[in-house]
Image (tube, rainbow, N blue to C red; front, side, top):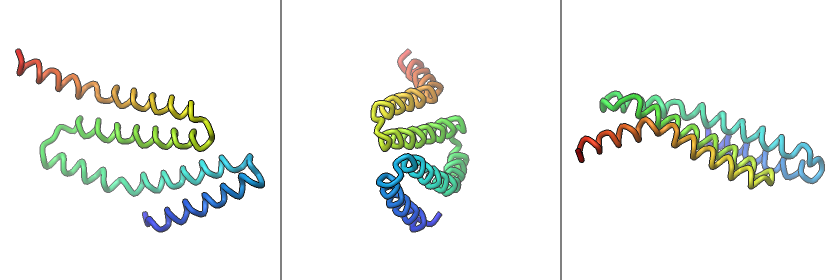
Length: 128
């Protein structure tokens, strides 16, 4: 991923959305969402080598793969939640954006439950 391409796409899309908002407002939001999705997909494809490096490092350090899975899934939930929330805010739906953020936080907590249970088990053994 070339950052200049992404920045250029973002700027051109922003100008296009502003123009559409003036002359054809019904096309402004879908155009903005489409541009954001394209940029998100470019970013995700560029992040794959990072995920591979994290897995490789975790394997070398003998870290349980479940922990890395929880981390990667949580990061994915955070990114998707932020994207959806920002899209709602851009559309003027700040109330919906806050509900999506709450759902994302709950999803991360649910993903983290196995890790929390294991930490509490270790603490219980140390105390008891």
